Image (cartoon, rainbow, N blue to C red; front, side, top):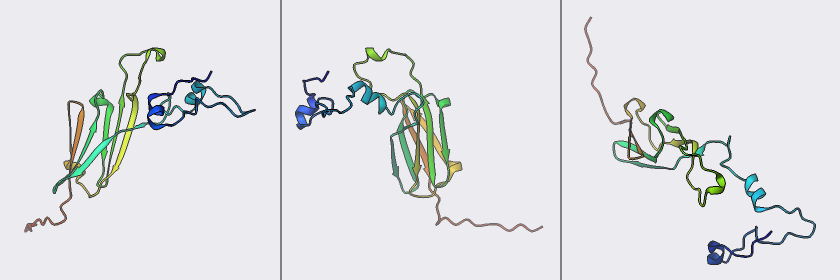
Length: 156
């Protein structure tokens, strides 16, 4: 029931897997499968996954970048306010593969979301979003508080 061979990571770090330890006398015995099944955060019906993003600024704008490869534009929703940007989407798995046939499964499929608190206020109406080769780039012009605009008075 317990495997004797240590993983590469366990041998490298000197750690011991909880799945390799003998249970205490009288303790409930849980298998690796039941432990992982109870802690699977990617189960069907789970909350949205979190989208990884890069955010940087230039003197005139804030730039948000995220890898959204495999997401159709119609499955992407971007909401911008003066202080935040929220990116929501859904990445659908095209090919359904039997779980037993996987050797490794790291890609995230399903709904995802990310809300970013911006370091400066932006003009939501002037924002633009572009996707190229799976990379989403959102450019958010900063509000220029130093800008002065002359107002002409009309005579009626």
